[in-house]
Image 1: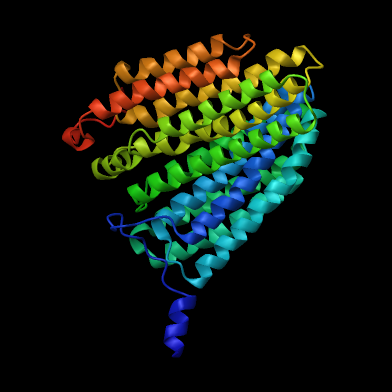
Image 2: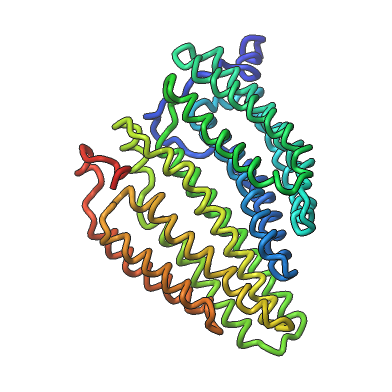
Length: 415
């Protein structure tokens, strides 16, 4: 093989991908990256599960929300950059692997962080180290893109600069995190700074993200998060029956409810084609992508929390030693379901049909699920409600006109 051919495989110009490219799908490297991210998701869900059954619901939920933001934000940055600039050369692969190492480092630090939250102190050290590793790889990618994409050079440089500045803020956050009163406000401030970087950078010119690719990436990650929910629930049921529970009916109720919940949520999410909305947003120059992109935090975090809640619920009903945990573990299932249903409509399905005809069933289902929290078989009720919602939403989706017939209408931002 000639030297120029070898060089071309090692190092290609990192130019923008065609947003109209036919047949664009997730690459094998992206799928591998998602599997590594799900390790971090599993660690966060496990920490939430242990916190709930250990009587530390408040710190556990707060710690979970913070840890999941770190996971989700790293995944989001990688996914949108790859949609715009993935050239699959050796350097791109190596820098992606570097980011994967950062993800695994972050995942390794979640257990320690969660234990610290239970004790009222922040232990962000290993998570921040993982973030630094990830950010090094991402910044180098943006600098490569700035060099090879002159039309968006300013945008790429803004991304690189914004990421570096905010990352310095996270490093400075570490010593401050030892002061309990500063943890939440400083964390919230840095989250706002993170969210501002894409909006600031894209003002100099939008990156060429691929609508069908982005829709597929988001859908695949939702499936992976649901897979983690299935795994945690299965392990909990296995442990309950291995321990020869005296309450098999209660465990069976959680199991059946969990099956209806997980598969119902999957059905609802994919009841409408997200790629159509993404295509319209790209074509019309709207900013729906920010609602869709950022709002998925609530969808993913709630979906993973459902798994932690089902696991905690199974553990409790199999051996109900603490009556106080009955309401806690029930709420650990019903509250994230309600959040997920509302978020799914606001962030995703509303962009197809913003009328209350589709909104009321989702809000009504969320209200019924929440109202059933004190009931003995709340998870079974939740599963039945979601199954009914699937029937309603399927009929509405089938009756809806094709989205392209309303191409000139607003994309639903102000609805």
